[in-house]
Length: 67
Image 1 (cartoon, one colour):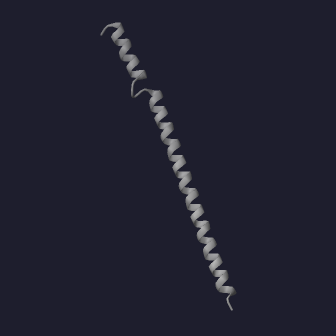
Image 2 (cartoon, rainbow, N blue to C red):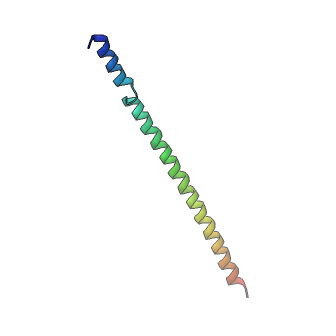
Image 3 (spheres, rainbow, N blue to C red):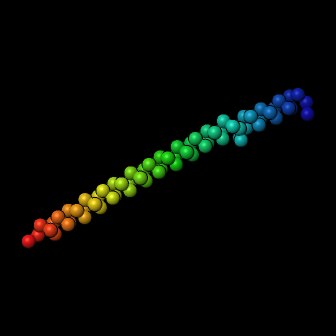
């Protein structure tokens, strides 16, 4: 391989589809998306639990206060 072919090969490795920066960017994006999804799921679960507890508590209070 000539000098320019070696240089082009090196540049392709460094800046190609599997380059460190692109892989790093993909990893960061995937981690951010996973964290956002987990946070949204946790918030939804907490809201559902709070609503269920409130409904059950109000039902218990209504039954307990019924003469």
